[in-house]
View 1 (cartoon, rainbow, N blue to C red):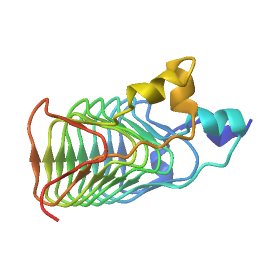
View 2 (cartoon, rainbow, N blue to C red; view 1 turned 45 degrees about the vertical axis):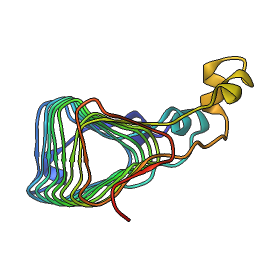
View 3 (cartoon, rainbow, N blue to C red; view 1 turned 60 degrees about the horizontal axis):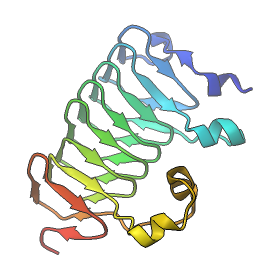
Length: 194
């Protein structure tokens, strides 16, 4: 198995101007720009189960300049973190997700795969895969899919549904919208002005 699939402890000599906490692990090709700090026990470029099982190649994971990533964060393979982003402790950023310049991801937030967050956003809570959040949004709720009951009944178990190619529409949050704590936005609807 490819050594990069197994991950390596970050070496500050390979990343001048970047500070690493204790036991930061990097997978695949990771680009980290100057002025960035990555906290203890964080994982950057983590492959998904599909990468490991299918031995598919890893994409570049890019961390912009002057980014803060707290302890115990997982940034999955192919993610792109913009300049000046702050990701607090214990957050997960899914594969191929994008976090725009000067946005903040609050403690313990979960962003699944291909989530696209705009610039200057504050994100807390949960974002299902393929969510789009435009610039200047404050989001503290849960953005989730709606799987109709008739669709769920077609599958013998819940894992089969999630492993299927069925793509439910994801919420879209428009510029300057505010989603309050514990609000739940379900399915392919838009919040905010077009």
